[in-house]
Image (cartoon, rainbow, N blue to C red; front, side):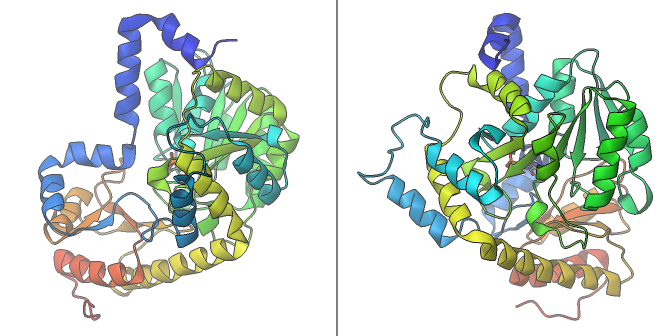
Length: 397
Ligand SMILES: Cc1ncc(COP(=O)(O)O)c(C=O)c1O
């Protein structure tokens, strides 16, 4: 079995160096790419207090219960951060209970980024392409390209929805379909019935293709046909679901994600990962993850409602001024601001609001705006109005 450690050894020092730098280069893609594109603006953002609407984070960060659990983990009875994080049992148990799965259906990652890279590594090759939409979250495509594995990009369909027919056709003979739902950056969601039909169709056309369903923003969906693909993945080793604590649970900087699937798929992925020897998991994040889940469904429902209120407010603000947004089911929105994204972004940044970077091929008019608190959005729309010459009727708080 080729594991991650063996892979790095196999490719040799020079290539391993290249691998590492690309690996690090891809890390924090949301912000790092933005920083590289706008270094002067980034420097000025450090000097003033900026409303950060560029990386799809939870503006409130971790809850009090999560912060308490982290503090306790430093105590004499908790696992100290001086120990390697091999004690994943409590988190695995809590996750298993909350999802109704067993531990062999789960593998943990340093953010879902690790899950996405592992799946790309395990399921694509020089002859087995990665399939995804353009645009989508770039992690898998960037990693496949770095490995020299082909990537097939499929344009979006009507209303920025995934074009499932063309995706299924492109999937023929491929290794992995990256199915990002809700889809970042466009924020649209494909209902569960259509998703299940798509999976069945891909497997009729291409029985050996694996589908990675990325549910990073699952908690924010308000679509009537809203269901996780976890039950489908548990039955079929050709489907893997990726989840994260970075978004609704506000733990982006703590780095914790996981994959759920059939034991065969999970074994394949964790065999690759476990070869790295010491765990890549953050011991504080393991404690934080347990506390996050123990808050139960009421926490997620409240977070979904809080986000929806900010989303509805911002969507209406743009619509009232004749600017169209896609139908967002996430904690960010994709808006036609009518000017190049860079122009809008630079204008907003000069006034203390940082919005999303360019997302080709839509950078000429569309911008991704992550949702902050309601108060932040009220202040942000005032800035948007000034930058776009469409004044806001709502005074900044
Ligand atoms: C769709 C999607 N998947 C995965 C990730 C990776 O998140 P993390 O590694 O923090 O879990 C992101 C981050 O923004 C994302 O937008």
